[in-house]
Image (cartoon, rainbow, N blue to C red):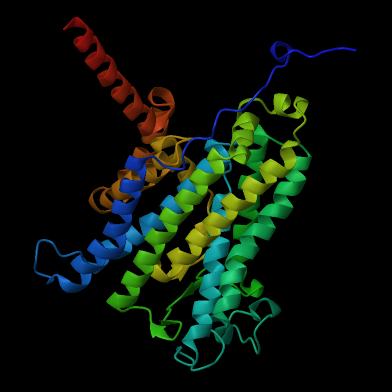
Length: 385
């Protein structure tokens, strides 16, 4: 008989997962929610327009649009910052969500268009007699909500399954995603596809039967966008703090070791790829009614590259950083396109190069370095005294 002493037994346990958010983090999240859902509506709807504290309709539309971009930056961080997969095609998923919402908004116009027809104006102009098959569910808001999730998700799943199963990675994967987006843009430019061609969809009038151009509807969309951003941030935080998120980070750092440990990277990469695409689709659906237009230019290669820049500037693998990067870069873009429009693209390129060379961890990495430096200085001062 053999005996097993307690000393001979070795127990391995994983460290406990970090909290979803710290107490300070929850307070910041709640403060952001109050600013979006309470303070902004008060400043826009109830503070007089001649007051210095008034939030203009232009400011509401601008911040709402930037918050949609922040959702895209958050989605990019999940796939690039935490999984190590650089996508240059997320503009496709953003545009797909936008087109699904745009189709619904076009059906909401009804007979108020220029041609007084049930068909959208561009179809009447092209002498179409009936709606194409892919417009069948566009008059249902519930179906639209489902398709906003399903269309980007299914496209992402089909593409990701074959790409990840073939073990395409690195720069080759980035180039393929870029090519996919460019091919989709060329397809949507064609009039016979039924997506409005070069002009896309515009002249929206109603959403759920209510006028879309009123300050109240714009504020509802603003609050909904902000709440969605905050909700998706908590979801993303929960994902990266879970065992699923740990495997994603292991895939990012050493995919071959993950395979040797008995994990199949395919379902993990495919799952986060689809989640990231759906988040961009939701952002596109929120973007369209606030901006008032959707066309194939949203699928341009430059738009997808900008998403990567937002994540890089703010700091990959931080969740908060890409949101900050999207806010700062798009805020600077809005200012520069008015004051110096000819220099905007040069500024964007210089910013990306500077971050790559001098701030590889983005602004959040710089903030952490400064915080650690202050803490170290304070500890040294305390030890001397």
